[in-house]
Image (cartoon, rainbow, N blue to C red; front, side):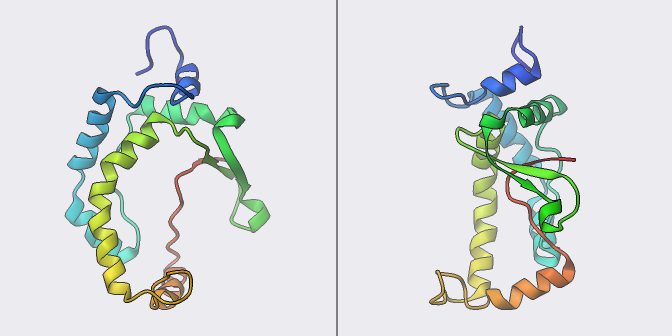
Length: 161
């Protein structure tokens, strides 16, 4: 919920502004609890089977509204991608610039410890690093599989149609 006297748009625009203190302990704890409540065994199994997984709701509707309200604040984004330009469909998405919104910071902190063991396991399965930019030698074999399965992971972004 937005602080008293502010709209979600105003609160979001002020979130993580330069000089703003770190994410509140209370908000960080809520995101950590939601991340902890996810079924990580199922997430791991879905990632292994499909290359993607659903974690369940990590943001409240108010928190999602705060993030969505940032879309019109061009200064909060480092780039905007037109999907039609690259024949990815319609619409656009944007990459946040720093400082990131509190929700992004809090969720990164909550999810990283859960995702790191999965990433390390995948790294081990992919094999030793190749001489090409530190990429695993077996990556080339996995990319066609992902394309064939139409599995595409989106980076942290806000997308609007």
